[in-house]
Image (cartoon, rainbow, N blue to C red; front, side, top):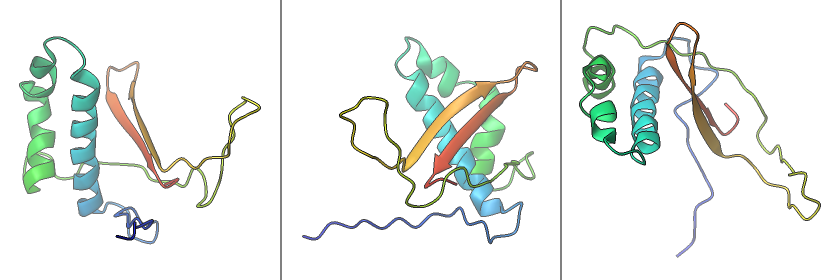
Length: 120
């Protein structure tokens, strides 16, 4: 069986801004990434599954109709397709970053989800 090296992303810079499909996709990924981070902590279910503050985002991501009319996101290219990186280790091989994510708490106690998929 031949392996596939293709990836089709819903993120496309040619799409108009405020794309609801992309917004819902990012909301779903944010919830799953948050769960992945929290599940290593005792009592994670309280913070990820039962936290009522996440319900509007859950409902928006799943059904598209909720108190949230649109979950805003910012999109930009941070590295190009085919860009390779090298660690400072002298024996390091060049590598691509296919995807990465993190969370950031602002001083205003807002939680931001930051994700890069194929440099976008």
